[in-house]
Image (cartoon, rainbow over all chains, first blue to last red; front, top):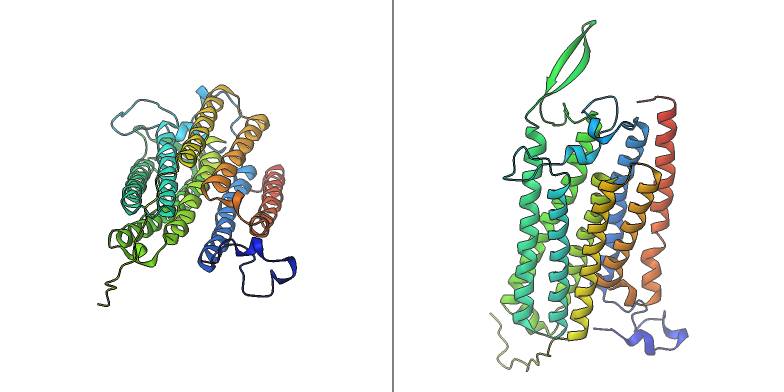
Length: 255
Length: 110
């Protein structure tokens, strides 16, 4: 690896070949630039959410008086207030808080795997990679439940007025999908599925990559190679997924 | 299968206690910030001030994740700026699109 050579080279030969001016290997650089492009993709989704949300009227009354309606954008803490095994109890944002905690913890175990890789400590890399994979799978399971609950809806249906064939009718809506949404404007459900779905797919890919790294560590591929840089590269991806969740958490669930 | 019989000696270094402690400190800070966000979520009224607090805290959290966990703070300056500078486009996009959204709200477009 061509680490540290850049710092010893004199100013004029830094960009003339033979050294790494950015002080990182090709693979690591490409991971960084991929993540930058991925950041743009997620920004596209989240910023469009911001646009559509700003274009809708906000709910202005007291939080306790909030009811689902097509007239205004829902308050997220009134939509996401369910926790598995605690049916009927209002626990706003608790479950999504647990999910956030799980993802941050799996980021920590990942960075500990990277640290162990620097020390060529195969056993420790295996241990921390397993914890990271476990965290990823737990997060995905939580998200599966969250989706199932969002799609299935609440106990009491929301009543919406709709103009059909020249007259006003009242419709009962339970749950949400890409056609109906009991929680508010249709766009809200669509963004929920697209943003958390796109992020969830990233987590899923991350778990697969983490498993690959774990497998290669167990079979001694990196030990024979003499370095654990692959752990670092996949680690970058995994932290990025955590980073995106921090933004999704704030802009979708809190604001 | 080509197997190297003369496997090179692998020296496993002991854990870097200081570094690991620092990582857990960062994890603690991230946890605390998230807990604080929860506190704000249920004690403050919805409005620009609340949103501003959330945005600032999210940026602080992002800074810790990218800087410490992803190690960007310790990379060569050129790499650091090569990643940071393009973010300005995201900021521009955010400002432009949310402003657009507010204008759409004014004319009752949706």
